[in-house]
Amino acid sequence: MNLPLITAPIMENSDLAHGFTTRAGGVSLGAFESLNLSRRDGDPVENVLENRDRARRALGLQTLVFARQVHGNRVRMVGRAPEDGIAGECDAMITNVRGVGLVAQTADCVPLLLHDPVQKAVAAVHSGWRGTVREIARQAIDALMVAYGSRPADLRAAIGPAIGQENYRVGPEVLEAFIDLFGSLDGLAGPVDGAGGAKLNNTAAVQRQLLEAGLAPENIWVSDACTFNDDRFFSCRRARGGVFGGQGGVIGLL
Image (cartoon, rainbow, N blue to C red; front, side, top):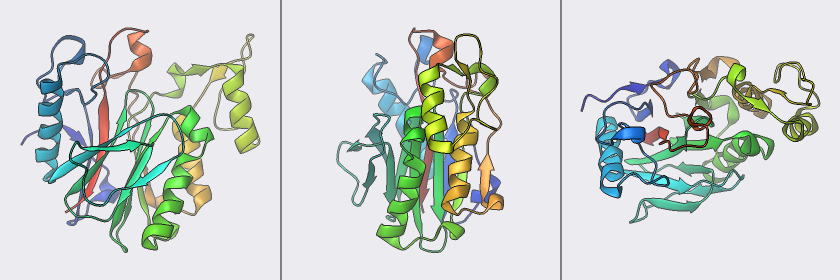
């Protein structure tokens, strides 16, 4: 199926399917036009299920597994795919089962895909600012190490489209959380404004966490697309409290 997907060159592997979806190629209408993968905002279920199946078929996977994302740091290991396609409440999933595609849904947050080409395992991670502060990326890497014997130096990472720093002002409580974790805001946030807020680069924060976890810089690919500026994507912040859908980062072993 000819479905627009954004892919990372470093993830190209005959045993791997991966991609970041856009809004194009689906059946949803209106604010959800057209490849909405999210079921939470009122798009008819049959549309969402058809969109999800189109993504599955485009990637050549047997099934897709989604999570009830809660901006936490829980990781679930997926063996046999659940009948309803929902792994449960978590913000990262890992698997070494072929044909099972893991999906990180986003609409501004950072989608992170991980592949271990040595131990043959993958992970999909949803990292909003809360997930970043709770180190969900590091939790996923640790889970790969424990479950499958992965080594950070072997991992390949793709950080997909997310809201760019220029459009992502956060308040002082968020900045304080990042300072507590990283020690400073250097390289992660712009100048603090009069109200104590600043523009945050959550993508850079996730990339820094990958490096700190032991991934090689050359094994990390980062999309330069901003979900707020680029109407190929759904964006929570651009919707300004209105209705919006969601795209996804998908990864699975073939």
